[in-house]
Image (cartoon, rainbow, N blue to C red):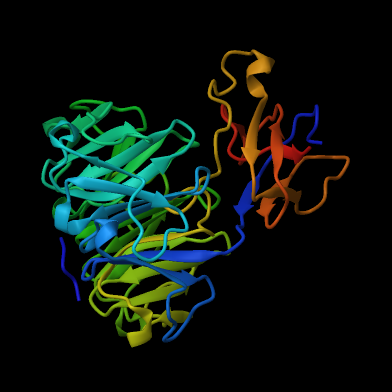
Length: 403
């Protein structure tokens, strides 16, 4: 029930990426219980969680916003009972595990932290604050009573009780929902102060209704919004103004009641947290109309209690549950200094493999991270990214080889 409002020495064109991890999991925060539950990616029916973070040492209470950082192996959670706090745990946290750090105190300015997004490239944490009508940006590693490094707040922002947030690292944009105005606002990722949005999706044609969570697919150039009125609506990523959805999942067959967290996987599965009926619903990406889910997680053994925040280690191209595709190079190629375009990143669990294997003509290339592998480094080299015929100033994914 609901409780809370080579690649080596060559230029390569990369058209799509996918990420797989040793265990493909679905993470769910429960707004009606002091727990965060994790399920196998293939779970369905009355499936028990494979991990449950719960107990007095977790400092959780009921749980709200949730985000995964797969690059640094961390899990970010908002305890709803103390919504002025963001707790951070190891990604594989289980049982009565204490947070490794907590962002809390008067200097944070947090009043009702709602949703979270992590930027592992620029090392930033984005928090929507429902009560303060704001977006507060902190250092990813902030601990204790730390002030934000930026705040988006004020009448020009048109933020009213914001909830969902998504950071697009390729286009440097933030997507934020405002349920009471039934809108989705888009800001520059580096926006600060009382700034106007770059664009706003709003109006009767949008069919937005108490918009909650938001997800953006860079591969499909689409924007997905969960509406607490009982629907999922899909728009072009750059939709601005009173734009009708290109698809809308709604009706009695869908089983959707109070949808919250939403994520699209690399396999084009749309996963949704259904808060009122304590279920996780899964639809094909192209689902439209009054269609039944392809599968669901529901039942007493699941431990679901008001599923709210949601993340998946298979999430496609950036979300609360996916670390990429990542703009690897901090200077975004602007400097022209090729020495700045090489970097070594230590990885202990991931091995880069190619699908399909490299061919002499590298006009398209897809890279996937696979498990398991012994410790090694991923060495990054110069890449030239073209997406839909347009050269991007920053890479949109990993380019690396195993040493």
